[in-house]
Image 1 (cartoon, rainbow, N blue to C red):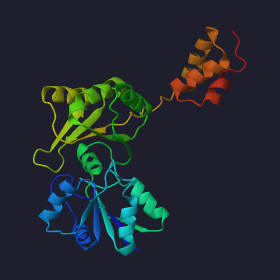
Image 2: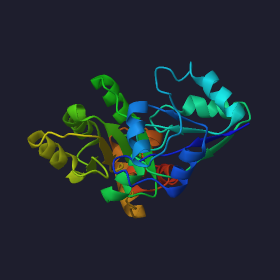
Image 3: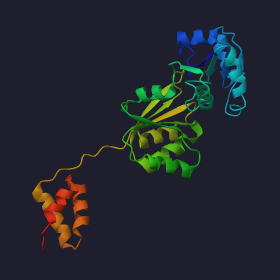
Image 4: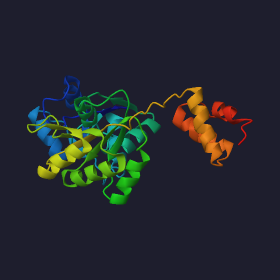
Length: 275
């Protein structure tokens, strides 16, 4: 049984491919490509004559048997139009099916727009959340953004140029005016990193309509350190609420949220309170 290689290809600049990837593409029996026309440009550039078969969103399930038949006699490489297969590209089903059949799956490191945009954005990279392609419909987009509004991680997503300003406006309305970066045409001649607040970036692209492939990097929700009040301040705030008739449990919860105190400690301050 052969090996299924997961081979990243350049996201723009044809030089962004590893020596190992080129060797694998030359040595495998078959290359399963998202679009054979796009892949031939790369393969002809490096004089690689390995046979190609199409493997894309519309035939990915029907092609499984043919690819596994090829794997019975030799190695197969899976590639997408650009970047790493399986990341918002066809590949997940094939990789999963190969693992279920006990076939060795060997992923190669390589080009990826997510990581390239993230490290070039200037935003925190220690933790990030990848959202994939943003939904086309306005309600679905807002629902997604609302679901991640409280995340402190940097957010990364793909978007198309014709929907960019609508997406930026939805981000501004839902997440607020956060620091962000629009990375465009990565590794290509007209590569651009437009950095600023959401409002600033939106104004830029309203005046300068975007073209090409786009990755959004959005700052996470700011971490607000809770204030720590003195006992005198916490007691005064609690008693003020109790004076207005607020139940002790409810008042303690509210003061704890404002003061940085533990709710049980605030509650203890109010025990025995008399109006």
